[in-house]
Image (cartoon, rainbow, N blue to C red; front, side):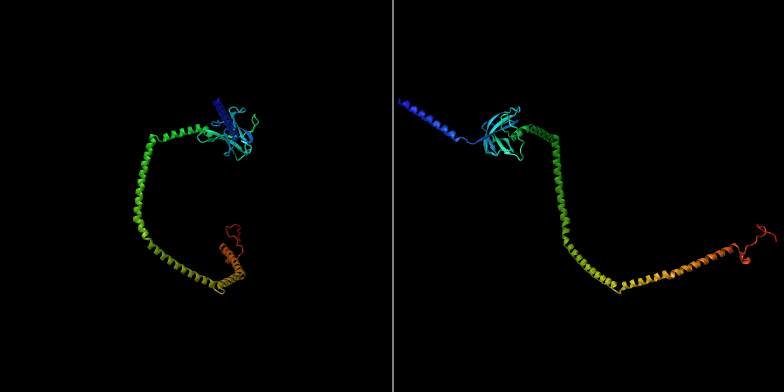
Length: 321
């Protein structure tokens, strides 16, 4: 009887302790925050996302995933329902994307803000607002995987063509030619060194005397410049003397003016007289020319005078006396 009472007391104690632990767990895990429901619709796969998965806003936990199913409005789309703390700054620029935790493959919903507001999505049949869900980097990589593999195969095929037997032989010949060219360059470099040692070094050694001669030449040129400057000063003085009042240029100007006056007087007085004398001479010459012409035509003028000569026998108008 005593053993049964001890067993009953132990069982009651265990039940009380279990109830206390359950109550403590509920008290510790209680959540008094208010949540707002949102929906996400996507045509991409949501592998690794489970209910109760975390919802983070820029890395801060603000809610959890409450349901994962299919979108009744769009055939083939996955519908995700999330509960977000009402204190989270959800706005028109907010969008969602699936994030993955390390190598475990577990996914969570990551919320972030874009630079420009997104067009407002119409609510679903449940009446809950919807947020745009962008493809995750892994989803984009999975979509582009076939294209990447095709490009890799094409690149591999081209590499195999480049590394074919014929191209390898050409590459070997090219390397051989490059080696020969390098040897030629080395020989040319040695020749250049020898040329520098044989010709350039003596030329460099001759530079100091040449510089000395150039310095002497410059001194001579400077002296010649000084002489030219002195000559220019003398020419300037001579020019000043020639241009002074009463000087040679002034006298030449006076003589020129006197000559101009004499030419003017000749043109106004002497030249008209000469013109009249020339006219008289011309008239006398014309009269003398006419007289000479008349004598040439009728020499009998000296005998009979300038009258008309009667016709002779045999001439028209002849009349016997």
